[in-house]
Image 1 (cartoon, rainbow, N blue to C red):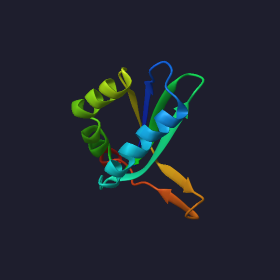
Image 2 (tube, rainbow, N blue to C red):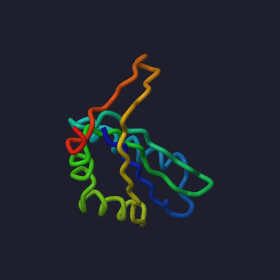
Image 3 (cartoon, rainbow, N blue to C red):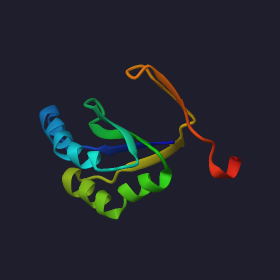
Image 4 (cartoon, rainbow, N blue to C red):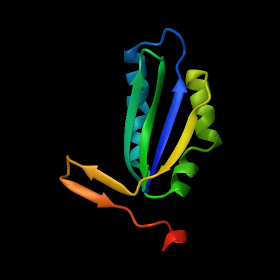
Length: 110
């Protein structure tokens, strides 16, 4: 599994209601991503930033979902370039599902 961290600056003066409206608008699109396990939207009003944490089955799918077309939409909507980082996610504790999930080792380590 891969955790993807995305963060971008928001335009000055944007309200929480506007940020939340944007999140609600794009949320249904992410339901169609077969390899996306979970998306957690994030918002920091003090730093005037928003973004998300994504949990993906694999990095290839994460990178495909966040290509140039997606980056262009972020720039057009918020006027900034997103910062994207990827992290291997070897273990996940999910209290809502009462589960601990261990990911398979990357192919190179098997």
